[in-house]
Image (cartoon, rainbow, N blue to C red; front, side, top):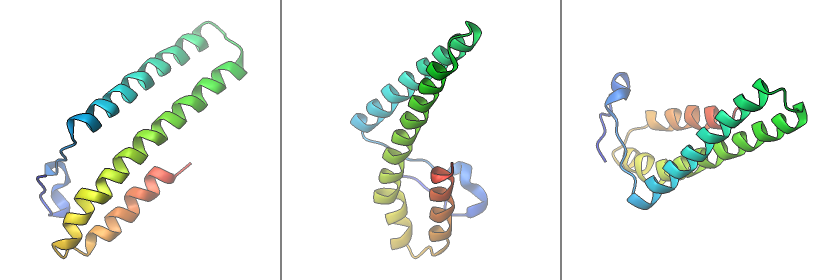
Length: 104
């Protein structure tokens, strides 16, 4: 992993996921992309609201699953590395990240 720990240069941080994790995330995101296109089509076709809402709930669930996978990897790698390097500000950053993920 390659990180620029300067908090003003967040865009220079990168993560490397294993091929298996990356493939899993890409498959999930492709599925979500299809579901969102499906929701758009359902709205255009005036499909029953309850059915559209069920699809929206499925997308929320899918996004939460992707977020959990990424958070787990972030805690095991990025966060772990930063704390070993003595970066105390990363705890605040992690709390902000978790808060964003858990917001509803």
